Length: 277
Image 1 (cartoon, one colour):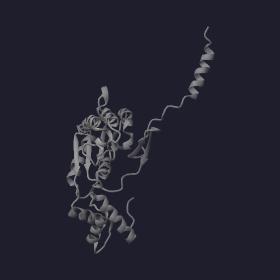
Image 2 (cartoon, rainbow, N blue to C red; image 1 turned 30 degrees about the horizontal axis):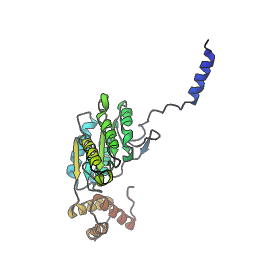
Image 3 (cartoon, rainbow, N blue to C red; image 1 turned 60 degrees about the vertical axis):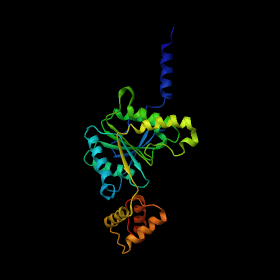
């Protein structure tokens, strides 16, 4: 005969030993978050400090990205976005600055940044977000598939959503230095046959991004316009501004929005002017 009280005590003991269910995420206290898959936590972050108007030389990219983001914010059809091109040209900055600008009009809009090494955690993350009332921009910066097709399959699964379909309240944005997200030493590391198979898988993920926005190298005139824009905004006066900015870019071996910002920070430090972090 079954000892009902004994079974009840065993059940109570097992319940006490079991870890508590994870708390529902709280997105009320911030607009930007970083996801930590190991703990399931969403760590709040402050708003991105640079305004959208400070991103000079990428007007076409700004217009196209903001248009797509606003469509998403109001529930209209839109596309997942791949921002690709030369490093330091403002891909990640555009995503965050545009988000903050649009979120001012849409309080339910949230941004969650995920690490590129945690792509395998995207399917369960998307399933969690699907049940929420908020609308989420999920950003993966500097995405590439260094470990082959496994990460590509996980991302494709997240974007397709399985039998439930893709979550209507999630917009995925990735930045990459490469248009097709593949590492440059693809063939050397994997061998020709394996590389060809993985390349097909990875390129099929690229096709899931309906909107590709390219960022070409920055010419000298645009670079100087970026420097002058920052200098005007923050009141940094230097009679030889252009010459010093060009010397800075020559030392770095590149012209980009990132290099311009680094020069302006150095100039601001010299002049004793505080800038956004």
